Image (cartoon, rainbow, N blue to C red; front, top):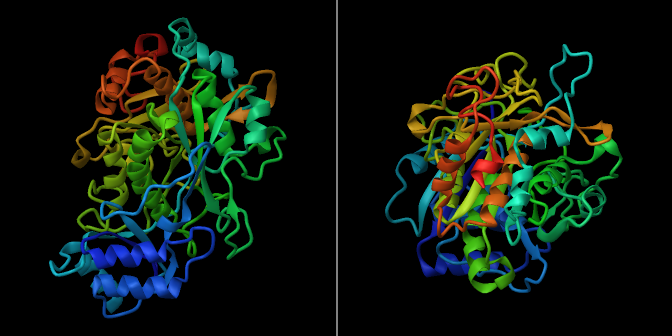
Length: 480
């Protein structure tokens, strides 16, 4: 293990005075928090013997900015707050005190559901592979849609109308999206600070939803914008919502680069905010789908599976709990399987996270999440697509199914769509199409995932469900 690692802490208020303190701390979301004050509050709430140094308070970083929404949900005792700690020696007395909190928080704490976890880098699940090919792309978007039988959705009137699709990714540039997909229904999202996302270090200039830097010139179109365009290729009337979660560059494990804490904050925020929006803002009362074309690639600094701080094999990790809560709140969740398949894994993949039974873990292993592997336009499995099965502790069979990837834009072979990222976004579009006809009240997210798996079609040379392609190709005609 590295000399120092990053931790984060989550908890919910238990006593009214704690909630009042947090509400006061969060009065303004348009300027940086005083991290020293926040650290003092964290020390007091957890009864720590030391004052931790904070990198940030990720819960603070997502500012609701949806079209037609003037109010924001109030902070309540049901909200989960996330604090990102600076690097600590994992063998220090301070770290041991955090371990004790994670194992058995004292009953007298004024907060509840206290969890401590390792923080890890995240990155888009895109890849340029196979390197041995003279040209890495096969077919174009039209071929990919044909393989999914996506045209049948339009025949059934399933255009994604009134369905809200959140793109948790690098941010979207709404102007570029409008050029790529004329008529795209972009409705806002969350503002996020620039720090770690292409802005100057330490700056808190908020990037508005749809305002991610993007010149729109062919292959430099950002990942989030590309994923939104793929969702709309299947569900052209879906309402696109931007949540700029990921950093602008692929981060390594060297240095203070943990972003998992921001993912935890984003998911708990979504689980709290979406029901509030459904109830209070009629325009957002329809179904919600979360597209996650990203992954954690390297678990080299993760704690052992036996530790309560472990992420990869621990359903009780704060992120796994937050993501698992979304389907229970009638929110559909689609995740990329990852790009750590045995034959041409992404170079970011850790040595222990490559190949069968080792490359689908954490959020992608959660049972009620729809986890998507990738095949080429001729249905050949792509050798970088992560392989199941997942750890038995998750009680799931992964991947669930597959969708096309490694293709070009129509009439533009300089613009590529690669990785399980693209397969995930196409599948999220299929889910949006289904949701325009069938509400979560009629078919729960858990039941929808089962329906997607049950209606998938076997691809070439596939006799049954397997660890590479799951149940087979998403079949939009049967699914919708």
